[in-house]
Image 1 (tube, rainbow, N blue to C red):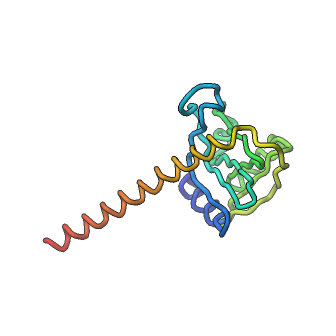
Image 2 (cartoon, one colour):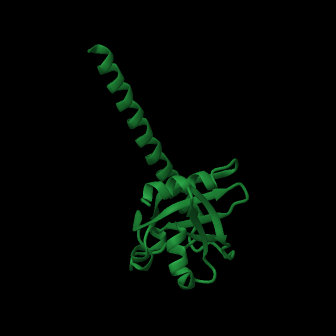
Length: 158
């Protein structure tokens, strides 16, 4: 399974009215004590109308799960997302307060619930980081649409 495939499955599982989500959100620098943005991203961040922030780290292999890269778990609820076969190999290594979504047969579901905790980062800069990432994703979509429109126009001109 690729990261893009896992992203699509978790997107379909989590997208619903009242939940806002964005992939690859850069953490604000207040997390690291500096200015601007820290050099750390969360794979997926959601915010819902109840005011809950959920952080998700996507892992597509055992080595990815065990890597020394940061696992950004600063939310009210924090989750891993991984294929089911990877989960079966690492489930004993998942901290008790971290939940897990697994992908199996093109469907993603929660196999382990996260324990609620206080947000570990200032909410105001997190909202700005969330909006910045959403804007970046929207910009990518608009460029893709523009490229498709240009491509279609060029084909018609031939």
